[in-house]
Amino acid sequence: MSKFNRALSNFMSIKAERLNEILNIPEALYFTDEDRDEIMTWSRPKARCVWKKMKRNVAKRKTSGIHYEVCSYCVLYNFEKFKRISCRGCGYGVRHGLCGSKSQPNDYIKIMNAFDSAEENPMRFFTDSYYMAIIRNIEKDLNIYWWMLV
Image (cartoon, rainbow, N blue to C red; front, side):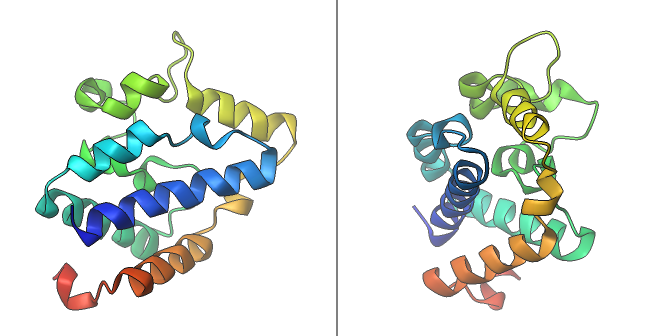
């Protein structure tokens, strides 16, 4: 297990905690121990690449909200909107249902419905500046430096 595995796990866990704070959504609806265990099995190069891409998505693309560009699993499997072929190997999808599927129940839809019911916008609570602060704090805590990402 590398620092990058822990960074990804911490990132997802912090988002789950925030969902619980905002909407009283159980953390396990977004991120479970099984999800964490799977991330911890990823090789260091794989975890490093996912962390680097997620960080770039936030910094360069200003990614906000509950978005596939800030999901460890979507980044790993190179998910692209409207191309579900990448979801076939996704362990997260097996545990939580395929995100956004209209034909199958899934946790992503439950979370988005909770935002709608509370008349809240996920982009208000998960801004790019919020994500950058999380990333900076995680990198500081785990001693991840810029040259480790090059």
